Structures are given as structure tokens and as C-alpha cells.
Image 1 (tube, rainbow, N blue to C red):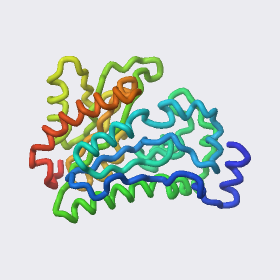
Image 2 (image 1 turned 30 degrees about the vertical axis):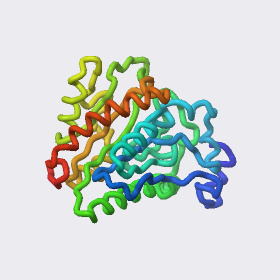
Image 3 (image 1 turned 45 degrees about the horizontal axis):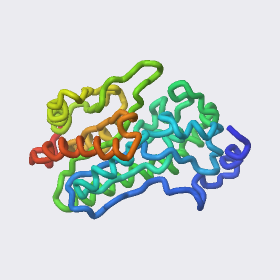
Image 4 (image 1 turned 60 degrees about the vertical axis):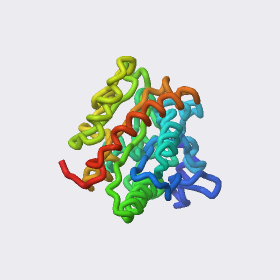
Length: 272
């Protein structure tokens, strides 16, 4: 890590300065929609005190830093359903909001093929500071949004919006959309059926990643443990790299989700 980032830790200054963005953004908190959208990897931002984590600026434009296009898709979905949306404010390279804090990849030393200089010797105290600055504000905002909906007598479905790279470690990923889930099939199974009804759409069932292998912390922590219907949806990044692409695939997902949301069984607490 660079001297400036190390000094920021050494003198115990806040990681997030007055000119940095907030760690979380809540959109449409009082919307009429009865579901909650979240976006765990919405931003590539790094606070000034962290000196870009010792990386070249170009790295922040790549998938290693964030889920490209996911925030735009999430915003459109939330607008379509007049639902609240919680967006993470910083890059997953600081700390991954979609991993448990004891996961080895929570603060990744290497992301895909990229070594993260500032993450090579993170102490427990530094990890705690990052969690307090970036991780917990995001997850507290999700809890607060869910409590607002539950205060209306709603058991709100939770939809986590992500994107994935078309090539991962040299291997092409052919799916257009991936649907990640573990035990609760209430959203995932009908969503895959509706998306898969179009022969032009290749749908991945727990592909390219699996929620059964630690790739769905947010839906597990806030959905599964509370008995709320939940799912994590991944869209391939080359499909949503432009405004037109975002509009098209947000509409495809929105139409499919609208049919799924018509089932009143989604809006009940149930444990699987």
C-alpha cells in the first residue's frame, strides 16, 4: 500500500473523508412497491485516503472493482415497481458487501488475475475499520429498508442485482442471465421458467456462480434467515454496457419479475 494510505490508517483518520461519496445510497425509500431491490457491487469508488488501493486507475473500470451495469439495471427495476433500492457506495476491492466477514475473499488479496497491493497485509484492526466504514452501513440500510416495509405488514421479497463478465479467467460464460438461489425456490424457479420461455435467452441455474457456495451473502443474511422470498440475479455485462442494453435487459427482467410477483405466496414468511 502507498505511504498516504498507510498513514491514513496509522493516524486513525476516518477512511471516508468529507469529499468522498457516502457508503450507501437509498433510492425511493417510501415507494409503494412491496419488495426491496439491493445492489451489492454498485460502485467502483475508492476513498481518497486509500490512494486507489495502489492500483492503476484503469483497474477501477473493470469487473474486478464492481459489477458493471448492475446499478443502472437495479435503478430501472426499482422504478418499474416503485420499490426502494439500496446501493453500495464503494468498490468490492475495499471489502466485499456480498461476502461474510470471515470469508477469505471478503478483502481479496487477488481478484481474478489482479493483485491488490493495499490488501496484501491487512491487519485485523484494518479489516474492522473497513467493515465499519463500508460494509456495515450498507447492511444496516438494507435492514432498515426491510423494517420499513415490514412495518406496513409486508413480508417483502428481496432481489439482489448483479452482473458478470462474459469471460472469466479465460473461460467464456454463455449465459445471458444467471439466477442464484439456495433453498427457497419461490422467486428463482418461476423466474427461470419465465426467462427460459424465450429460446433466445440462455438462463443459468446457479450459474455462473452458485448461492450455495458463498456467492449470495446478502440474500442469505437478509432474506433466507428471515424467511423472506429472495433471489440474486446476474446479467452478463456485455449485454448491459450501453443505455440501450440496460433498457432492454431491465425490461426483460422486469416483465418476468412482474409475473413472479403476482403470486401472493411470495409475500409471506416461510423457511426452507
